[in-house]
View 1 (cartoon, rainbow, N blue to C red):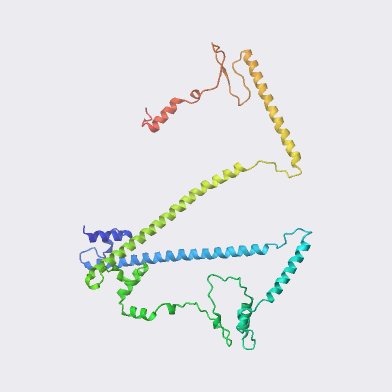
View 2: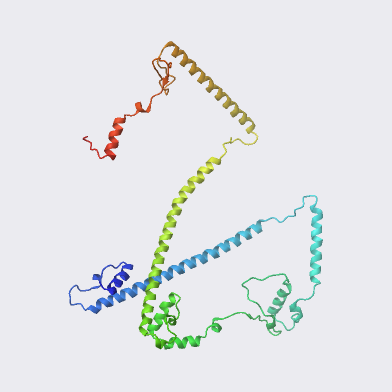
Length: 388
């Protein structure tokens, strides 16, 4: 097998195409050879373009979803915060007798602060002569009124654009954005247009293809300082190898991402059941068993439950004593066993020896038929047939 055929098989195996017989239209030898090569080239380009488009769609969907979630979380937080502030009751911290004094003190303080603010020095807008109402339009009057109310300690938003006061002309009512940048001033579109007019469709396609992976210029493929010193075929080899490497790496990374997401989902699903059971058991262990009676009635129900427990405990002790007395009496009469109830265990008396009389319970060797258990175990694990 030649290296070219091996590379071709590996390339098409990435997309699930393991054989080349499906590229043939006619199975006979009358089909030209170049048609198979054309089919391979068209299929390879189609699969590469589809993979790149699907990757871009996935990235766009994920980024759009993340931005929506981020915006929605900000809106929800602000809405909740505003609802909390609206529902707050603004009251003084002083108690009922002292609030008569603190209310009057806060009222006089506000009045004094209001008068002191009105007597302050004029603002920047007033110094520029914007108070001349005869020359200003209603829009400028509103802007001047707003600027006069702005405090010195007020801080603007980080993303706000600075407004130049020097552009406030007395004849107009326009505020110019001095720091605003437009895309027409950033990029020299005439140079870009000339560059793309001189390029062929193959060069445009090549540049767009490498721009997907962040390679905007093909000059990085050159090794020597001058283009005349480097053979031209090396640049094509570098481009082909780089494109193959980027495509394979993107496909591998997508498969790794899908595998990691599926494995994470399965582990979370398995862990959730265990955590739920653990939390439920922890909750049950921390539960305090108390009576459901309310506060006034629990004085009666607590004593009733206490007396009930004492009576039950004493009755259990008496019942145990009666059982032991009957057992001693029947043993003295010489009976072998006696029955306490329906679920009692029968005791057998051993013959008296040097150690005296003993009572024994049924042993595990007498409960199970160990011969049957042994045969079943050998049938299952020992390779013994049923006939044996």
